[in-house]
Length: 205
Image 1 (cartoon, rainbow, N blue to C red):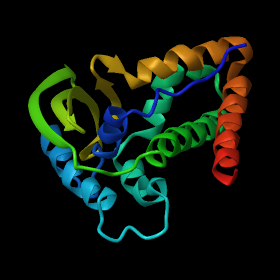
Image 2 (image 1 turned 90 degrees about the vertical axis):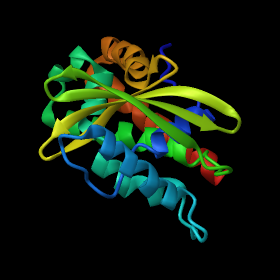
Image 3 (image 1 turned 120 degrees about the horizontal axis):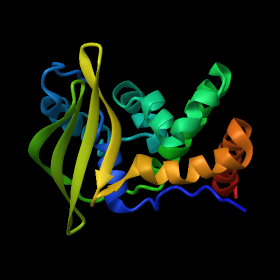
């Protein structure tokens, strides 16, 4: 039986995910400024002195929804089969997948020391896509993290994160494509719904 499994929510993945969004848009011509602003804004939420009772996934969701392209991430993660989803199935899959990724990582994260991010070179992937290299130091370890961004309107949006050479999107595609081959869009949606139910059950247990 094919099982869909998210990447283990390691410190590097969580820190990379949660520092890759910003409440302040930067000029479309400067993806690195977009990410620099992201770090400060999100860390201010993650490490707020009085965070309140809301789960971290709820507090950071507005920032991630604004500056990650949920549709772009999901479409790439599903792969070629995406074209065979109906518009309603695409919409539902985006909702489920983004919610699952966010809740899996954010709600298992316990903020300790703030991560340090050093920005490196920006590489052009295509006319409207760039890859920004960074070095992330967290809990005594340093990781190579590349953010892949695409131009959307007058700003940039993140569509993939590559940690130590491992693309999050590629990891999910290997699994979601297998689910699609097994039972089409219905199987992808059913599995994502099942995983979210498992998270809810684990939370209430």
